Length: 265
Image (cartoon, rainbow, N blue to C red; front, side, top):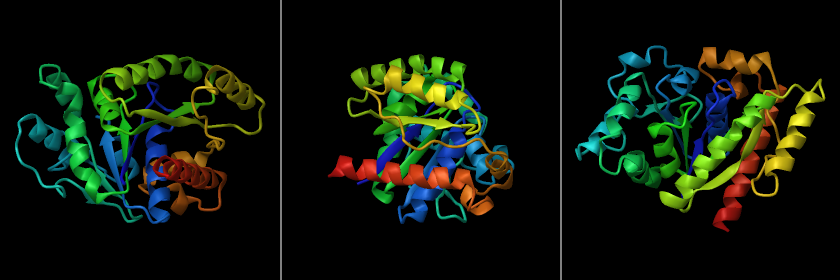
């Protein structure tokens, strides 16, 4: 049974796209069939996977969502690219920002992405959706399409503060549009293990949300190597397979897999 996980954060620079790519490739390494969907007009995830000029692609997410809106037929393989590390992905470009504005006047506007994703479920074990760092219509669509949400949070006070609004929005989507939506967990990223600062943030998080929301045991350490991977179009597993960040993403992959097995069990 396919699981759809949306990676969401209303703050940019928390490692959202990097997490989407490395978790996706981590799952593929564990034998899962994975589709990554870039639902961010900035195309950060597409860039992480080696797409140099997203604006020159013939088919991206926007074209398929437009077909859903206009009730036109489309093929399941349409627009899908394959990455050397074993994942399929659907890229995005700046045109997605225009569609977000158009959707405001569309009937059932919050469910357009769900209609696309539901058709793709039969072909994959996991579908991961990378979102814009905002709570706009495209992010709402990604939440409505998902089974769960994974929230990356940078180990910084302001990043933790901004969580409240996102969690409220997820709650509203759960109540009004997608009753099966759950929070997969909060993932701490860019954790500097040399300081006690990250430990303080972690304790704050657990005090504020730990009783209601799963907080991943594992965290993603701060590392220059992680930043370098997005420029190279490959995962941390290829760039620095023995480093602390690769270890972090391996542990996250195992946690997500075991969480999925509990849900199915």
